[in-house]
View (cartoon, rainbow, N blue to C red):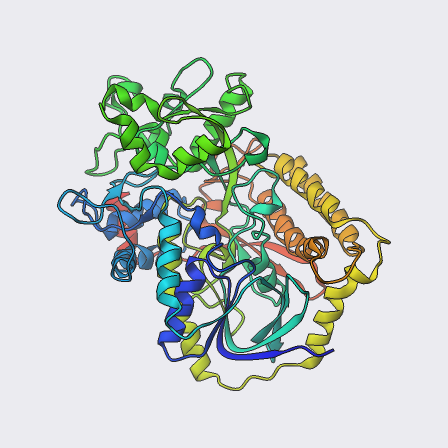
Length: 604
């Protein structure tokens, strides 16, 4: 059948922070650049990153620098990070923040007019440049306003279902319009994946409907490795009531501005069980004197700003003890600061405007006077496409990845705020090196048989005419089992059960039916998303089962301690075998340079 063919030098799949920054860079390098996005431009999930972007500018505390940022990132990632990525990120993030400022981003300011920075979990100093609690929104606005003048072609509400190959090299993608169902072919000399995460594989998530692991699955399908897939970050604070908004993010910025966590008894439970790494052993008591101490750092920090994996588990612990809030969470209280600040209500509204309106409109709560009910929500995946630290190219020639669908920077646990700076640091690098690859590898040949195969595969759910299981039922079943058996606390038996159930759901998905035609058919979209969701879910379950220890965001009740002898030195790789089955194996971590190793020993 007829389908338009769009030719470009660099194709970007995804229009969040990473995709837009990659597109801007590729275009500035003189390449004809196209961006395909699953939703509308401006709807990217980057807008949900509210608290700020981490960069060691040192405007609030001049002791901060890239060396401390890189050691914070490595410590937070339990040293499973790609150390070169952590180094590049820490060094280049300040320039990317200043670049956004030059392009029109309106950051909050210090009294002397510099970019203001706030505290965030796992960061030694106030490091997050922010715009109230709408930082991601401001980033997207700025990148879009700058990007539309670069001559980039945008294709909105279009989903890529297959990458096209030629002699082992990526040469384009096959896509369809979500509204009309028309098929499109993109011919490209290089492709950048920037599709975000996998949150819709879980029942409770802060992620919107687009987050179905598309980039992960596209890369996996053509032979790229996925690593760190066992590390799924459950943000400690999502809304729990009313049910219609369960999982919506409550920014860490609330805790950064002084919010404290309490159980139903009114106790501030985060002082219990603080990891030894973060305790000042000379303090008289935990509550009065615990400090975030490493090297020469002795700033007093609230325990609510420990790493997200720890905070999420402490909240679950309180709920299991029967000390949760009425709707199955705990209480997050920012209103208490009125005890110390006479103009607290106006301060909260100024610093947390989105949170104020979110709870006012969705839950009927005024956060300036009343504690919020919060609980863990699936938020971010540290795992993704294994890429080269400098170029962001995967093991498949011509295929690059950046942002959440790429892995390496965050290791076992991402620090809050590192995600937004990750997008622009490695989005820029992916765009730059994708452009260089396109210039050096000019010939592109699209195989029509691959296109015909992609068309046939996409049409299968429609042609079954209702004689098969429904896509929504399969998706719901997958989300339930991932939430219950591959969630915050994991066990070998449950993950084995999950892997077996995913295999059964795969069989059902292969016969799924979406009656109707291609126009305005959400059931068809869900049917096509299922394959991606099942791939990433299997990777999470099987990688989690293989890692027999607890580290970062991966916590196992049957292996509650870290294994320093083996697992501290290995990532887990998931790749597609020749027979189509998933191969899961441990691979050595990237070794640290001597300079970074010395930094870790000195500072971390």
